[in-house]
Amino acid sequence: MTGGSNRPDQACPVCHRPDEDAEFCPDCRWRITGEVFLGEPGPDDLRREQEALAAGRAAWDERAEALAAAGPEPGPEPGGAWDRLLEELVELPGAVIWFVELGDERVGLIRAEADANGIPLVTEAGGTAWTDLLPAFAEDPERRAFQLAGGIGDLPPVDRTALDTAVRRLLTTLLPTGPRQRTVLLDQRPDWPLLARAAATARTLRAPDAELAPAPGGVAGVRRLLRGAPLRRDHALVLAGVDAISGAVRPEATLLFPAGARLRPGETVAVPVTVYGSIEADTLLTLPVVTAGHGTRHDAVSAHGVRLPALRAANLTFVLHGPGEVEVLLPDGTAAERIRADLDTLIEGLPRSLARPPRLQLLLAVELCYATSPDEVAARVRHARELVTALADPAASAAGVDVALVGYYDHHIRENRYTPRPTLLETLPLGPPAAALAALDRWEPVRRGQDTVSALEDALKAIRLQAATPAWAASGRLRPQRTVLVLGARPPGEPAQQGRVPACPLGVDWRTEFTALRDAGVRVLTRRDGPVGPRPTDRSRQTVWDYTELSWCALGADGALPPDRPPAATAHDLVPTWHVDGPPCRLALARSLL
Picture (tube, rainbow, N blue to C red):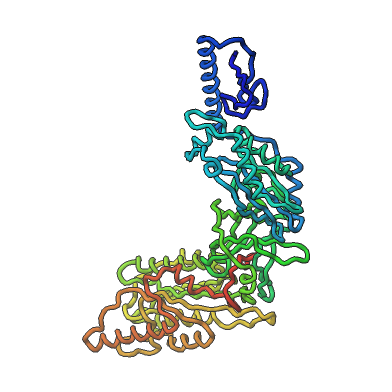
């Protein structure tokens, strides 16, 4: 007998492949037909036959176990037929590709077509799980993979003929007919005998236009395969462009990936793009990627939401994974969130124009006298320094900042116009913030000459002279926004003695200087420090207390800042704002506005 059988109507006893009247099984190479012997086989013959059969089955199952456990071997690169199918899909109207999927879970059919922009659309078209197709298949994924790889073990063998019939019946029902109905065979594991058998059955129904093996399955797997299709139209990023003269806002398209570009399997293409934040901080901006072509409308294929610092540059990376599949990487390498956005709504919602804010002119008056400790002055100077530093940030003001300084002391009690005068003021004319920061380093604190008033009235006069309205050129340059901020503890002196409130020896009237500043369009703010006690009970001190409170209240009519307010918050409030004609801009800017 030599391991053979004289019954050609039976399946192979090792792998259960139906007999094809061959001497050896094409799958497991078991000898099916053997020599004819006279008489009955003896016990030794039967024993040797059973031992050989058991060894053959064990070897076959071991092979199946190894195939089921191992990953698929790399297949050949998709050939020219596959490339032509992809080109046809995105270029020809009505083109459809039907993917016959043979995987470890099911037999399925997936439909792929392309929209007017050449973006592939993939949908599920039907299918049946192996366990529903034939009851002999195990529910457990590992045992079923073992069966598909040809293994039998202690499971009932899968009837190969029944498998052929079931696959043929299912695909006959699912596969449509008609022109340009292309078919691609996707075999997840061509090295598994039962999947190879199902693939052979599928070929008898319709010769596939291309075969991909091993290939991913499911809708997601087909989408990955279609990433190799050429781009039918340009892929561009839509940003907001602002005219440098008129301020008009219009959408601008920046080309990312040109039409005709295509990716090899597993390849991506990255393009760096610098965009700029809008005028509002921490605003969710939309980055729509659109398809564009000659004579066609722009349609959004993806949109991502990002939060960018106001007016700051952000270096983003746009990564092409396939037609219509664009990923956006933030500067830190993380992926931006994909959002839903309507391009027409975004464009219609752009502001009509953005008017650049005026230049800020900040005039700081800082009291340099202390009552008990130089730390009092150091705190004021530190506040001034942090404020100027915050305003010096290029993103703080699009039009720029100029800073003037007046550090003021006080008059001595017995001072008059005939006695030697102490230093009253430390001044710095309007200039860049860096010059103001350097001047602040040179200021020295001085103990008070008196407790009631300071030389703030002289400081206001010096500021008023600096803030004299310039003669503006005929070019239409914006008038600067001028703000005075007083940092001190004591009020100004009166022009003449008022009870216990001393007079300014120089006769300066702080009310006149204050009114002149406001009439010239200068905003005056105050930040009063030091303890403010309750109103005293004796009348003479009440006069001083009342004068102090009323004068600070008058000086702070445009705004009195609390002592604990952070300088950065004050800087944010001082910066002139953009004038937006229309709704807020929800697109990133194409160019810097600084």
